[in-house]
Length: 479
Image 1: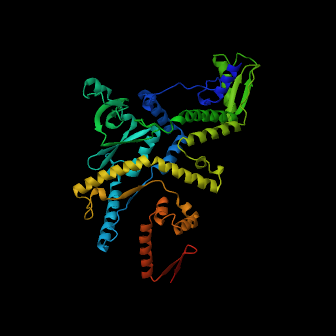
Image 2: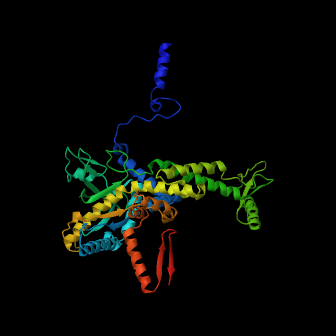
Image 3: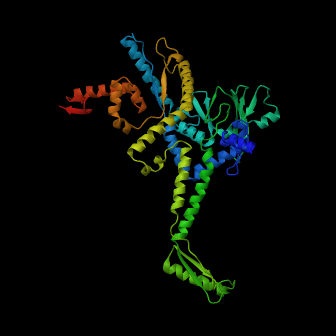
């Protein structure tokens, strides 16, 4: 008796998650790494499932497009600053270099200058890379001589099995191949095995690439993970069930809209006979009904005594629609997209404001790897341009002295107008700087002031008097 009570109390003091019960499925114990959990064949199957949904399911396309709208959007800004005691000439030199660097990046961002295939501009390359990250799990960006970039899809990075068999690639005890990445004992990537996609399907080993020339960007959940895994992986099953369920609901809805007519014949053999006479009678009845009633009519010829029940008109049911809403919320949460983005009627104005602000913060976290990749690419470009004489550094500058910034996801401009009084108070109290606030909305205070200076100067030439009312925030124009 005492032992039974002791064991019962002991069980209540432990973790319920590890308790074995018949009410829930127990997961098998696993100490494998994430790369071992997802074998190469399973990785390819997961990629195929995700890509098929992207091709055919409109909701999957919406999720990817909405995700890319903020995550794959960046802007470049050169932020080199002169010394505190710099002369006006020195300040102009630094400012001119900032403009020259931004113009150079803008020129390079065109498809003929940044894409090795001359097919995509930089913005589109980033959008495709993020699509591969969210669908495939990761994506490689290969730096090609001449300042070009080449996208390497995730499934093209795989172990060079054929090359290993032929003895072309030696294997060392301190290294191992993990899904196409040669890593050392510390997990650092040293080389990548690139494979060519064959026209008839499958892959063929092409070459090895040093890790210095390829940047692998992806989504990781564990510290020892070598290859990324799609953030949509937990939602793939729900996507598939929802896709099939909607198809079934549409088929049921079509049936409910049909005008059902059930006819019987006194001679049961008349409609079942294979002879021309009996079969022509059924066809004649069907032809007459279709002619009089038109399309949208379902005619069923039955035997004497047969009955037919038509599908009810209340399809799809309210329960099914509520269930679809719940599943959609789940699949959107896989990439942190608020449901209000899919259905704006579920939240009021202030609820949508909070959803937008919270979503932008999650996007900035996802952009960390992309921005670091762009920093590495920009540093590589600067060294090439300076070495080739295409870009002249300011006096006393080296490439390491150049300062720039890739700005990620920003808040929409309509939120700036709504929070203008809050921002003014924050600036007046010293909590924020005007430039920090401007950057959070994708702006630049220095450029704005320069533009305003040009506008006021031109207005003065025209004989107009522009005055800004700082109390009300309005601009008054007078002759």
